[in-house]
Image (cartoon, rainbow, N blue to C red; front, side, top):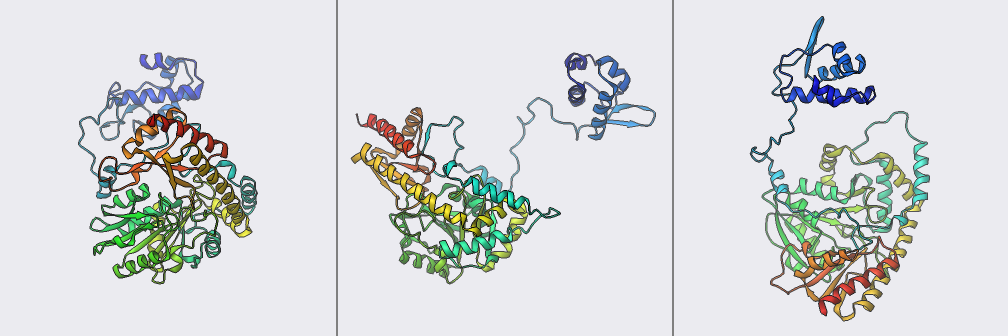
Length: 494
């Protein structure tokens, strides 16, 4: 007990001392200092020895008894439980050093073998062209707060789980919004509310693909979606895109194709808009192959100079398209709310799988969002943010033309919240060095090459490309960031 006395001391209050005594006794039981079956000091004796109250010692003993480390009986001193081999916590030594690799499911083994995009660097940069970021000042804080407070006043008498497909009010609001904004007619029963588009993609992968299947994927395309599908063990069929989006002439005839993932309204990342002829070819291909089409409409609200393109699902007569929408780009990626519009045959199994995954998305946030859509506030907000981002886009295009000139071209600017900047004097192999050099100047840029499933056919065959997200920046930051990038690129040419 001398070790306990020397480490616990007299300075902490009863709560602090009690926790420290509990931790030390537990550690000494685990490492064998207090032997199995050995008698423990009485609470009175240990309290006197350590200079703390008997109540403090009693609380520590009671916690150890509750966890099975000590045993007590009427009229007898507490003893260390025996045996402890199965219940003792690991010691401070690294016991995993000699263990064999963990046994994982086939899904687990697939995930373990994947390379996922890195998290944002710990040290932020002053000007970050990260795609997916939106400006915090664009969020409708006042309207959200008012709606939130109103919903809080209407809370039910009891709080319980809701249906896994989401709140009825939000699903009806989404149904109306899609009819007005995306030309998409559906029943509210086909809508399933999810934690953003990433969960929607994951549900599609788990339910529609297996190790014996293959899937069509745009090349280049959204890496996190590709990884979700690959995690099922299914085989990737990378299908090239051009300035119009997915090249349907390259659609495969493989009988094991079960799914095609597309971004027809604004191809990610290159920005093409799939023309109606190709849309019809894609739908006919899916009907012949009895394959599903996953339409990721990640930023379809943002089209400049004309109204947004209607969703692919709006012309789907065979009910083969699974539509994914999100509020991450219009409101906030931290909100974690999105939705699926499902073919009738898939509604039941998606609802059940959503229930197994996480029950449902946060109810209060769903109801707040539903009230904003029903009141017209949300759509007015989208129109305002569209104007803001159109101005940011114009500044980006002007800055690239002035500072980079003939050394660069920029594509995919007709819609969305990002563009791809091609640096014509640099090679794709130069992208990592360019990213590092810009970060050294406090500017964040992001390479396009990791989004290609198939590498370029040889060194220097594709110029260096950067995905330039602009929705999270001010016009002044965009101007300054491009000026710094141009100076970094200029060093390569000098």
